[in-house]
Length: 175
Image 1 (cartoon, helix red, strand yellow):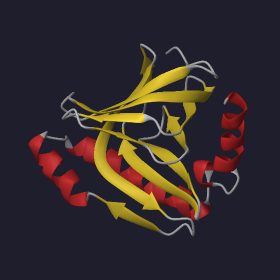
Image 2 (cartoon, helix red, strand yellow):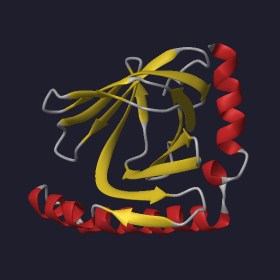
Image 3 (cartoon, helix red, strand yellow):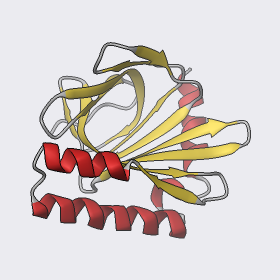
Image 4 (cartoon, one colour):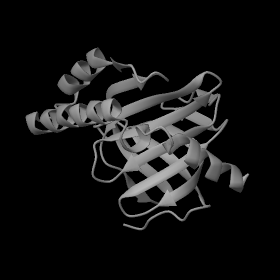
């Protein structure tokens, strides 16, 4: 797999299990790009939903994607602290200047005090039935949810206290 170049711009494309495009973030800056990890940043970027509706992100965000983990993490810098939005998803692929992944509905919202809520369990169950997620996929996704929750508790990887701040400082050097 070709890795994105730091300093380049990429699109982020989220798909559903059935192959349908779910959401597109138009413009993210690559801060780090390897075969196994991409760290990106965006601020006030255009997002297009599958139904054509658009919106613009409200704050700077540092995005963490890994090719071996079935989740991605977005750290949003707000006035009262860093909030994280985590998607249970397929590992990413990078092609045609776009980072792509399959969104599997289960999400975790993490607050600045590192408490968290699991979101969209009902949507996951609905899509699991509608799109016939195989039992092995269901196990992979739930195992990765457990890994993600452990990372949050341990403040590991993108949840370490300095991670978002350090990458945000790097982002500012490009602006």
